[in-house]
Amino acid sequence: MNQNEFVEYEMSCIRRAAGKPDATVRPVEQLRGLRSRMYLLEDGSESVLVKCLDAGYRNPSNLYLTLEHEAHGCRLFAPLKDGLLAVPEVKFYRAFEGSGGETLQVLGQTNVEALGTTLSPRDIYLDPTVPLTQKEAVAKLCGRGLARLVSADLQSTLDRAAALARVGEQTSRIVEHPERDRLLELVENHEALPWAYQNKFVGEMNVLVPRWIELAGRDATPETGAVLEAIHRLLTDGRFVEALSPGQSADRVILSPRDRHDNNTLLVFENGRLRHVYEVDLEFWGLETMGRLVGRYVAQQSAAGRGKVTCRRPEEAAPVDESLSAQMPCVMGAFLYHFIRADGERGPEMTLRAVSVGLASLHAAIFSLYVAALFPPGAAAFVQDAATLLSSPDETIGMASNYAEGRPPEEAEPALEAIGEAWIALRPLWELTGELLELPAEGGVSGG
Image (cartoon, rainbow, N blue to C red; front, side, top):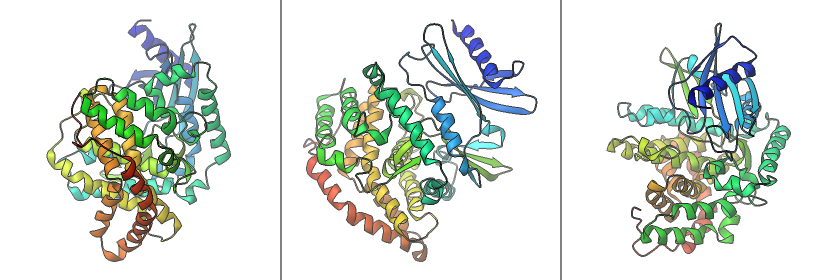
């Protein structure tokens, strides 16, 4: 099919999935994803946002499809719909098989943008006209929201058995796939791999990180190659792998959305007032550790603040005002501080969140390697990011601590105590990182 024929086919599948043969379907103009396409289905007064993802039509035949998993995730996290935080409601989901083995997945959800004016946190963080105090307020909201997502209170409301079954299915689909190596050849598939199973079958530390390092080094200069070799020695050391393994580290394994791209938290405003905070695009939810979750968020937002891209094409990186780079440590410090503090109740959960923030720099470094593998033209810059983060593994918790020092003492004291406990607990791991990471004498990474 040519492009026009495929769009017609896709829109007909949307009508069939919705059970509304006469509904109006129109493409959404703005780009939302590198591999998925967005439509609006309009029938009477209802407007439904539809996401389509395929393997074998426009995308490679070995692309791992994730919209069914996203539908399950939205249903699983429905308990969030009891206040400010929410997830989209699933209107319909269906998969269509083509004559040549192609697959098209169609998912209809709440059209969040019809509820009011929508902005992502990143829209606000990177707007030079928004005062820093407002950016801190948004960071506070996001930090406290993430603290709720990982809280024991919310976790206890989730159907954990159903979630484990779904993640198990996702695992089996990859582990038992007759062409598993072919799936792994496509680096875009790597985010869909079930993190919690990494020690058993296929995982980040023991399978994917070496691949990312190899891909990042394809056209690297000798300087960048030497840094990658040093990082490889650290990240493949058995002691380091064990320290960052789910269930083995100071983190607990949780159920939470783990895809922290820039537009996956949407703030909905009505008449200038914040009405809802939607967590969208849950196609990669799964068993996750807090340290990795927070690390990925910080890596993406901080890179954006320096004018870099993370999961977008390098040529789409917009120039960033230098003042934004200066603001980003404060903004991320606010996010991390409020994630640790949450509702201010002192106890084991606050300490656990502080420990997770202390591990975030290490996970942020690993995520930077993933981006380096995705975008070879920008690999040197992201390798430098990874080396810097690994060289200063306490940087992330340091941002939270610095921010806490500027807060009123009676507010900050519980968080500072938790940060102090985390600092003590993580010092051996940070020291191990320093011992194992032997960067070249120049310590630099240059383009290539």
